[in-house]
Amino acid sequence: MAFFTTLTSRTFSHSAMMSNSIKNVTVIGSGLMGAGIAQVAAQTGHSVIMVDIDDALVSKAQKRIQDSIQRVAKKKFGENEEASKFISESLSHLTTSTDAVTSVGSADLVVEAIVENLDIKKKLFMQLDKAAPSHTIFASNTSSLSIAKIADATDRKDRFGGLHFFNPVPVMKLLEVVRIAETSQDTYDAMCGWGKAMGKVTVECKDTPGFIVNRLLVPYMFEAVRILERGDASARDIDTAMKLGAGYPMGPFELMDYVGLDTGKFIVDGWHKEFPDESIFNPSPLLNKLVEEGKLGVKTGEGFYKYKK
Ligand SMILES: C[C@H](O)CC(=O)SCCNC(=O)CCNC(=O)[C@H](O)C(C)(C)COP(=O)(O)OP(=O)(O)OC[C@H]1O[C@@H](n2cnc3c(N)ncnc32)[C@H](O)[C@@H]1OP(=O)(O)O
Ligand SMILES: NC(=O)c1ccc[n+]([C@@H]2O[C@H](COP(=O)([O-])OP(=O)(O)OC[C@H]3O[C@@H](n4cnc5c(N)ncnc54)[C@H](O)[C@@H]3O)[C@@H](O)[C@H]2O)c1
Image (cartoon, rainbow, N blue to C red; front, side):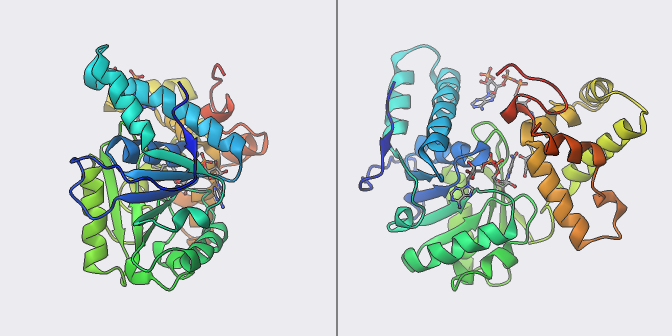
């Protein structure tokens, strides 16, 4: 099914599901998170442009969205014809582009989901700030960086915040909504309203490292690596222990592979640099070695475990 189109002009078509002021959404980055955010935004009737740096990456994201949306449709409608109507309608709301600057021209909201690097994110937002209309809200999906530092690249701090989704976006119900000192109440309310229109439950977070979930989850994952590095237990046994003993859907190594080991490394390296005396944020030699070898987890076919491609 070839439902996707490349960007020409943004068509207006949104369903009654949307009760907030945000209709046109541009998602920058079409990796694990960007593709998921774009998919759910399209499923909930928003007009979406999904952007990445080249056509091959966009095509890869389109393939992932097609697989995922079929799972969502099956869960919602079973095998009946409503399912294919839902898929084609949703995907008709989604266009793609490889040009971030032109893709924000009619955006009400821009959600950035590119690599976890402060300088690269700032450079992007600096360019977008000049191109987007004045009413456009900017949000970063960063896992660990300071929203205030990213917002520093723009002249719209009152219209800037964090929208932190969870992987896989079509399944995970939570959205952390992060406000900085300058975020206006209107912006915060619009972000929360959009989160609800996306079918998510929102929680309010301050702009502190890791917000709520990652401040707890990342140290937990890195403690698991340290158990493995000390030779105290195998990755498989640690995963089994946390699934069967603590009720987690995935063990810490399965989860790190799922999130991406590069992303895990970016997070902990950043925090280690910022808080060198906090041993809980110490980098892991084992994780560094896997990343150096290009073993980034499920997305590359190998991380702590091997996956069928
Ligand atoms: C680091 C960052 O900043 C923050 C983060 O994102 S941290 C990571 C947060 N995420 C997690 O903790 C995920 C933990 N894992 C899980 O919740 C579950 O293992 C999982 C939902 C990923 C998969 O669930 P599991 O039961 O193992 O597998 P599976 O049967 O394939 O999937 C369960 C359901 O979800 C659906 N699903 C799973 N992945 C999907 C996807 N990518 N798209 C759409 N649907 C999906 C399946 O279709 C299935 O639907 P069903 O209930 O109708 O059968
Ligand atoms: N992986 C997770 O579980 C997870 C969960 C929540 C938040 N996050 C955060 O979301 C962001 C993206 O993470 P991901 O896992 O999707 O990464 P990813 O590596 O899967 O995807 C990032 C994408 O951004 C693209 N990109 C890089 N620079 C770009 C630019 N200037 N313009 C357009 N596209 C660009 C890359 O080509 C890549 O396709 C990071 O900030 C990460 O910390 C990740």
